[in-house]
Length: 337
Image (cartoon, rainbow, N blue to C red; front, side, top):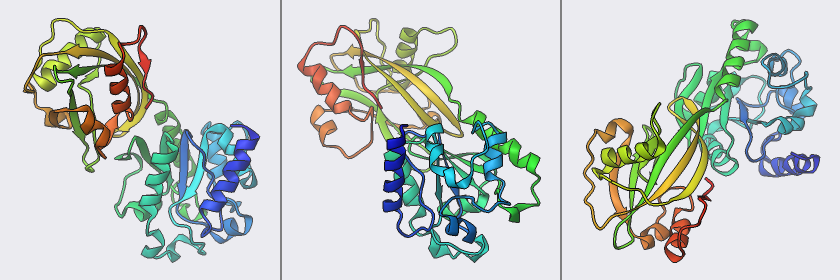
Protein backbone atom coordinates (compact mmCIF):
# COMPACT_ATOMS: atom_id res chain seq x y z
CA UNK A 1 0.00 0.00 0.00
CA UNK A 2 1.34 3.42 -0.93
CA UNK A 3 1.80 6.25 1.57
CA UNK A 4 -1.08 8.04 -0.19
CA UNK A 5 -3.39 5.09 0.33
CA UNK A 6 -2.36 4.91 3.98
CA UNK A 7 -3.22 8.60 4.45
CA UNK A 8 -6.55 8.07 2.70
CA UNK A 9 -7.30 5.02 4.89
CA UNK A 10 -6.45 7.11 7.99
CA UNK A 11 -8.88 9.85 6.97
CA UNK A 12 -11.59 7.33 6.06
CA UNK A 13 -11.17 5.46 9.34
CA UNK A 14 -11.54 8.62 11.39
CA UNK A 15 -14.59 9.68 9.39
CA UNK A 16 -16.21 6.26 9.74
CA UNK A 17 -15.75 6.01 13.49
CA UNK A 18 -16.54 9.43 15.04
CA UNK A 19 -17.70 7.79 18.29
CA UNK A 20 -14.25 6.40 19.09
CA UNK A 21 -11.27 8.24 20.56
CA UNK A 22 -9.03 5.80 18.68
CA UNK A 23 -9.41 5.56 14.87
CA UNK A 24 -9.83 2.28 13.08
CA UNK A 25 -6.79 1.26 11.04
CA UNK A 26 -8.37 -0.46 8.06
CA UNK A 27 -7.94 -0.97 4.32
CA UNK A 28 -9.03 -3.58 1.75
CA UNK A 29 -7.50 -7.05 1.49
CA UNK A 30 -5.53 -7.11 4.74
CA UNK A 31 -3.96 -10.30 6.05
CA UNK A 32 -5.45 -9.82 9.52
CA UNK A 33 -7.40 -7.24 11.51
CA UNK A 34 -6.65 -7.30 15.25
CA UNK A 35 -9.73 -6.44 17.30
CA UNK A 36 -9.22 -5.21 20.85
CA UNK A 37 -12.02 -4.85 23.36
CA UNK A 38 -12.18 -1.00 23.65
CA UNK A 39 -9.93 2.04 24.09
CA UNK A 40 -8.42 2.58 27.53
CA UNK A 41 -7.59 6.05 28.77
CA UNK A 42 -3.95 5.94 27.69
CA UNK A 43 -4.94 4.86 24.18
CA UNK A 44 -7.65 7.52 24.03
CA UNK A 45 -5.17 10.24 24.99
CA UNK A 46 -2.68 9.00 22.40
CA UNK A 47 -5.32 8.35 19.72
CA UNK A 48 -3.62 5.01 19.17
CA UNK A 49 -4.37 1.34 19.79
CA UNK A 50 -2.64 -0.54 22.65
CA UNK A 51 -0.80 2.63 23.71
CA UNK A 52 -0.29 1.68 27.36
CA UNK A 53 3.48 1.09 27.63
CA UNK A 54 2.78 -1.97 29.80
CA UNK A 55 0.64 -3.55 27.06
CA UNK A 56 2.53 -6.38 25.31
CA UNK A 57 0.74 -6.09 21.94
CA UNK A 58 3.47 -4.32 19.96
CA UNK A 59 6.25 -6.50 21.39
CA UNK A 60 4.25 -9.61 20.57
CA UNK A 61 3.81 -8.49 16.96
CA UNK A 62 7.62 -8.29 16.68
CA UNK A 63 8.45 -11.49 18.52
CA UNK A 64 5.81 -13.49 16.64
CA UNK A 65 7.10 -12.33 13.26
CA UNK A 66 4.26 -10.02 12.22
CA UNK A 67 6.54 -6.98 12.08
CA UNK A 68 10.25 -6.65 11.17
CA UNK A 69 10.94 -4.24 14.07
CA UNK A 70 9.24 -2.90 17.17
CA UNK A 71 6.56 -0.41 16.12
CA UNK A 72 5.33 2.38 18.35
CA UNK A 73 1.57 2.94 18.82
CA UNK A 74 1.87 6.25 16.97
CA UNK A 75 3.02 4.30 13.90
CA UNK A 76 -0.20 2.28 13.80
CA UNK A 77 -1.11 3.25 10.22
CA UNK A 78 2.25 1.93 9.00
CA UNK A 79 0.92 -1.55 9.83
CA UNK A 80 -1.28 -1.34 6.74
CA UNK A 81 1.86 -1.76 4.63
CA UNK A 82 2.32 -5.14 6.35
CA UNK A 83 -1.28 -6.24 5.75
CA UNK A 84 -2.31 -5.62 9.36
CA UNK A 85 -5.34 -3.63 10.56
CA UNK A 86 -6.69 -2.58 13.97
CA UNK A 87 -10.14 -2.00 15.43
CA UNK A 88 -12.08 -2.47 18.68
CA UNK A 89 -15.20 -4.41 19.58
CA UNK A 90 -16.54 -1.43 21.57
CA UNK A 91 -15.74 2.20 20.83
CA UNK A 92 -16.36 3.86 24.22
CA UNK A 93 -13.28 4.75 26.28
CA UNK A 94 -13.27 3.38 29.84
CA UNK A 95 -10.67 3.12 32.64
CA UNK A 96 -10.79 -0.66 32.24
CA UNK A 97 -12.72 -3.27 30.26
CA UNK A 98 -14.65 -4.12 33.43
CA UNK A 99 -16.35 -0.73 33.14
CA UNK A 100 -18.00 -1.63 29.86
CA UNK A 101 -21.75 -2.19 29.62
CA UNK A 102 -23.54 -4.62 27.35
CA UNK A 103 -24.94 -1.66 25.43
CA UNK A 104 -21.40 -0.63 24.49
CA UNK A 105 -21.29 -3.64 22.16
CA UNK A 106 -24.58 -2.87 20.41
CA UNK A 107 -24.01 -3.22 16.66
CA UNK A 108 -20.49 -4.58 17.12
CA UNK A 109 -21.11 -7.89 15.34
CA UNK A 110 -22.81 -6.08 12.47
CA UNK A 111 -19.93 -3.60 12.15
CA UNK A 112 -17.35 -6.41 12.10
CA UNK A 113 -19.43 -8.21 9.48
CA UNK A 114 -19.38 -5.08 7.31
CA UNK A 115 -15.61 -4.93 7.66
CA UNK A 116 -15.42 -8.60 6.63
CA UNK A 117 -17.73 -8.32 3.62
CA UNK A 118 -16.58 -4.93 2.32
CA UNK A 119 -12.83 -4.96 3.05
CA UNK A 120 -12.25 -8.73 2.84
CA UNK A 121 -9.42 -9.30 5.32
CA UNK A 122 -8.25 -12.87 5.54
CA UNK A 123 -9.11 -13.01 9.25
CA UNK A 124 -10.11 -11.02 12.31
CA UNK A 125 -8.10 -11.84 15.45
CA UNK A 126 -9.68 -10.88 18.77
CA UNK A 127 -7.16 -9.73 21.36
CA UNK A 128 -8.81 -11.33 24.37
CA UNK A 129 -11.77 -13.64 24.91
CA UNK A 130 -13.88 -10.76 26.19
CA UNK A 131 -13.52 -8.86 22.91
CA UNK A 132 -15.01 -11.85 21.09
CA UNK A 133 -17.67 -12.38 23.75
CA UNK A 134 -18.65 -8.71 23.66
CA UNK A 135 -19.15 -8.79 19.90
CA UNK A 136 -20.99 -12.10 19.58
CA UNK A 137 -22.44 -12.73 23.03
CA UNK A 138 -20.83 -16.16 23.35
CA UNK A 139 -17.78 -17.59 25.04
CA UNK A 140 -14.88 -18.85 22.98
CA UNK A 141 -11.76 -20.91 23.52
CA UNK A 142 -8.42 -19.54 22.39
CA UNK A 143 -7.43 -20.29 18.81
CA UNK A 144 -9.35 -20.65 15.51
CA UNK A 145 -13.13 -20.44 15.64
CA UNK A 146 -15.68 -22.37 13.58
CA UNK A 147 -17.73 -19.16 13.26
CA UNK A 148 -16.85 -17.09 10.20
CA UNK A 149 -18.01 -13.77 8.81
CA UNK A 150 -18.60 -14.74 5.20
CA UNK A 151 -15.21 -15.95 3.97
CA UNK A 152 -13.33 -14.28 6.84
CA UNK A 153 -11.89 -16.48 9.59
CA UNK A 154 -11.97 -15.61 13.30
CA UNK A 155 -9.23 -16.30 15.85
CA UNK A 156 -9.12 -15.58 19.60
CA UNK A 157 -5.87 -14.57 21.30
CA UNK A 158 -5.10 -13.98 24.96
CA UNK A 159 -5.49 -10.39 26.07
CA UNK A 160 -2.24 -8.42 25.89
CA UNK A 161 -3.35 -6.03 28.64
CA UNK A 162 -1.25 -5.72 31.80
CA UNK A 163 -4.43 -6.73 33.64
CA UNK A 164 -3.98 -10.21 32.14
CA UNK A 165 -0.72 -10.87 33.98
CA UNK A 166 -1.87 -14.36 34.95
CA UNK A 167 -1.10 -15.52 31.39
CA UNK A 168 2.71 -15.68 30.96
CA UNK A 169 4.33 -13.84 28.08
CA UNK A 170 5.56 -17.14 26.62
CA UNK A 171 1.98 -18.41 26.35
CA UNK A 172 0.79 -15.21 24.70
CA UNK A 173 3.66 -15.44 22.26
CA UNK A 174 2.83 -19.05 21.45
CA UNK A 175 -0.72 -18.03 20.56
CA UNK A 176 0.43 -15.11 18.40
CA UNK A 177 2.77 -17.46 16.53
CA UNK A 178 -0.08 -19.94 16.13
CA UNK A 179 -2.12 -17.15 14.54
CA UNK A 180 0.76 -16.24 12.21
CA UNK A 181 1.01 -19.84 10.99
CA UNK A 182 -2.79 -20.27 10.78
CA UNK A 183 -3.04 -17.28 8.45
CA UNK A 184 -1.05 -19.12 5.78
CA UNK A 185 -3.76 -20.71 3.60
CA UNK A 186 -3.94 -24.43 2.94
CA UNK A 187 -3.70 -24.87 -0.85
CA UNK A 188 -6.73 -26.73 -2.23
CA UNK A 189 -7.08 -27.59 -5.94
CA UNK A 190 -10.72 -28.01 -6.94
CA UNK A 191 -12.72 -28.96 -10.03
CA UNK A 192 -16.27 -27.85 -10.82
CA UNK A 193 -18.81 -28.03 -13.64
CA UNK A 194 -21.20 -25.51 -15.11
CA UNK A 195 -24.00 -27.90 -16.01
CA UNK A 196 -26.52 -26.55 -18.54
CA UNK A 197 -29.62 -28.36 -19.77
CA UNK A 198 -31.36 -27.89 -23.13
CA UNK A 199 -33.25 -24.88 -21.74
CA UNK A 200 -29.94 -23.28 -20.66
CA UNK A 201 -30.78 -23.72 -16.99
CA UNK A 202 -27.78 -24.23 -14.73
CA UNK A 203 -27.47 -26.73 -11.90
CA UNK A 204 -26.41 -25.28 -8.53
CA UNK A 205 -25.88 -26.70 -5.04
CA UNK A 206 -26.79 -24.90 -1.80
CA UNK A 207 -24.26 -24.86 1.05
CA UNK A 208 -25.27 -23.86 4.59
CA UNK A 209 -22.88 -23.71 7.54
CA UNK A 210 -23.76 -24.15 11.22
CA UNK A 211 -24.46 -20.43 11.61
CA UNK A 212 -27.00 -20.44 8.80
CA UNK A 213 -24.80 -18.66 6.24
CA UNK A 214 -25.80 -19.91 2.78
CA UNK A 215 -24.47 -19.71 -0.75
CA UNK A 216 -25.18 -21.36 -4.11
CA UNK A 217 -22.38 -22.63 -6.33
CA UNK A 218 -21.71 -25.00 -9.20
CA UNK A 219 -21.29 -28.72 -8.50
CA UNK A 220 -17.77 -29.84 -7.71
CA UNK A 221 -15.18 -29.96 -4.96
CA UNK A 222 -11.64 -30.74 -3.98
CA UNK A 223 -9.33 -32.85 -6.13
CA UNK A 224 -8.23 -35.93 -4.22
CA UNK A 225 -4.62 -37.07 -3.92
CA UNK A 226 -3.64 -38.89 -7.12
CA UNK A 227 -6.88 -37.80 -8.82
CA UNK A 228 -6.99 -35.73 -11.99
CA UNK A 229 -9.23 -32.62 -12.03
CA UNK A 230 -11.32 -34.19 -14.80
CA UNK A 231 -11.86 -37.33 -12.74
CA UNK A 232 -12.71 -35.22 -9.70
CA UNK A 233 -15.41 -33.26 -11.49
CA UNK A 234 -17.00 -36.46 -12.85
CA UNK A 235 -16.98 -37.98 -9.36
CA UNK A 236 -18.52 -34.86 -7.82
CA UNK A 237 -21.31 -34.76 -10.42
CA UNK A 238 -22.25 -38.35 -9.56
CA UNK A 239 -22.13 -37.70 -5.80
CA UNK A 240 -23.94 -34.35 -5.73
CA UNK A 241 -26.42 -34.80 -8.57
CA UNK A 242 -26.40 -38.47 -9.65
CA UNK A 243 -25.18 -37.28 -13.03
CA UNK A 244 -22.81 -39.53 -14.94
CA UNK A 245 -20.83 -37.72 -17.64
CA UNK A 246 -18.82 -39.57 -20.25
CA UNK A 247 -17.23 -36.47 -21.74
CA UNK A 248 -16.61 -32.97 -20.42
CA UNK A 249 -16.94 -29.86 -22.52
CA UNK A 250 -14.29 -27.14 -22.66
CA UNK A 251 -12.69 -25.66 -19.55
CA UNK A 252 -14.39 -22.25 -19.44
CA UNK A 253 -13.55 -20.53 -16.13
CA UNK A 254 -10.90 -20.41 -13.42
CA UNK A 255 -11.14 -18.86 -9.98
CA UNK A 256 -8.81 -18.37 -7.02
CA UNK A 257 -10.58 -17.90 -3.72
CA UNK A 258 -9.27 -17.61 -0.15
CA UNK A 259 -11.78 -18.44 2.55
CA UNK A 260 -12.19 -19.76 6.09
CA UNK A 261 -14.08 -22.99 6.68
CA UNK A 262 -14.52 -24.70 10.05
CA UNK A 263 -11.39 -23.37 11.71
CA UNK A 264 -9.01 -23.44 8.74
CA UNK A 265 -8.12 -21.02 5.95
CA UNK A 266 -7.95 -22.33 2.39
CA UNK A 267 -6.75 -20.95 -0.90
CA UNK A 268 -8.86 -22.78 -3.44
CA UNK A 269 -7.99 -22.84 -7.12
CA UNK A 270 -11.11 -23.79 -9.09
CA UNK A 271 -11.07 -25.11 -12.64
CA UNK A 272 -14.56 -25.13 -14.16
CA UNK A 273 -15.70 -27.17 -17.15
CA UNK A 274 -18.85 -26.77 -19.26
CA UNK A 275 -21.15 -29.80 -19.23
CA UNK A 276 -24.22 -30.01 -21.47
CA UNK A 277 -27.12 -32.40 -20.78
CA UNK A 278 -30.52 -32.79 -22.38
CA UNK A 279 -32.34 -33.09 -19.07
CA UNK A 280 -31.64 -34.47 -15.63
CA UNK A 281 -33.40 -34.73 -12.29
CA UNK A 282 -30.79 -34.27 -9.52
CA UNK A 283 -30.49 -37.40 -7.37
CA UNK A 284 -27.46 -37.29 -5.01
CA UNK A 285 -25.74 -40.59 -4.33
CA UNK A 286 -24.07 -39.61 -1.03
CA UNK A 287 -25.19 -37.96 2.21
CA UNK A 288 -24.84 -34.33 1.18
CA UNK A 289 -25.85 -33.01 4.61
CA UNK A 290 -22.55 -34.34 5.94
CA UNK A 291 -20.85 -31.99 3.47
CA UNK A 292 -23.18 -29.09 4.37
CA UNK A 293 -25.04 -29.29 1.05
CA UNK A 294 -28.78 -28.80 1.59
CA UNK A 295 -30.30 -28.58 -1.89
CA UNK A 296 -29.49 -29.18 -5.55
CA UNK A 297 -31.69 -27.58 -8.19
CA UNK A 298 -31.89 -25.94 -11.61
CA UNK A 299 -31.81 -22.14 -12.03
CA UNK A 300 -32.78 -20.07 -15.06
CA UNK A 301 -30.60 -17.13 -16.04
CA UNK A 302 -33.46 -14.76 -15.17
CA UNK A 303 -33.63 -16.24 -11.67
CA UNK A 304 -29.89 -15.83 -11.20
CA UNK A 305 -30.01 -12.20 -12.32
CA UNK A 306 -32.91 -11.40 -9.98
CA UNK A 307 -31.88 -13.32 -6.86
CA UNK A 308 -30.64 -11.78 -3.62
CA UNK A 309 -29.10 -15.11 -2.59
CA UNK A 310 -25.31 -15.36 -2.41
CA UNK A 311 -23.88 -16.82 -5.61
CA UNK A 312 -20.37 -18.19 -6.06
CA UNK A 313 -18.73 -16.73 -8.02
CA UNK A 314 -20.40 -13.42 -7.23
CA UNK A 315 -20.87 -12.53 -10.90
CA UNK A 316 -22.12 -15.95 -11.92
CA UNK A 317 -25.13 -14.52 -13.80
CA UNK A 318 -22.90 -12.11 -15.74
CA UNK A 319 -20.44 -14.79 -16.83
CA UNK A 320 -23.26 -17.19 -17.71
CA UNK A 321 -24.93 -14.57 -19.93
CA UNK A 322 -21.58 -13.92 -21.64
CA UNK A 323 -21.16 -17.64 -22.23
CA UNK A 324 -24.67 -18.06 -23.67
CA UNK A 325 -24.27 -15.01 -25.89
CA UNK A 326 -20.82 -15.88 -27.20
CA UNK A 327 -18.91 -19.07 -27.74
CA UNK A 328 -16.60 -20.25 -24.96
CA UNK A 329 -13.32 -18.34 -24.94
CA UNK A 330 -10.26 -20.19 -26.29
CA UNK A 331 -8.70 -19.75 -22.84
CA UNK A 332 -10.50 -20.11 -19.48
CA UNK A 333 -11.80 -16.79 -18.11
CA UNK A 334 -10.93 -15.68 -14.58
CA UNK A 335 -14.26 -15.05 -12.78
CA UNK A 336 -12.70 -13.37 -9.73
CA UNK A 337 -14.34 -13.90 -6.36
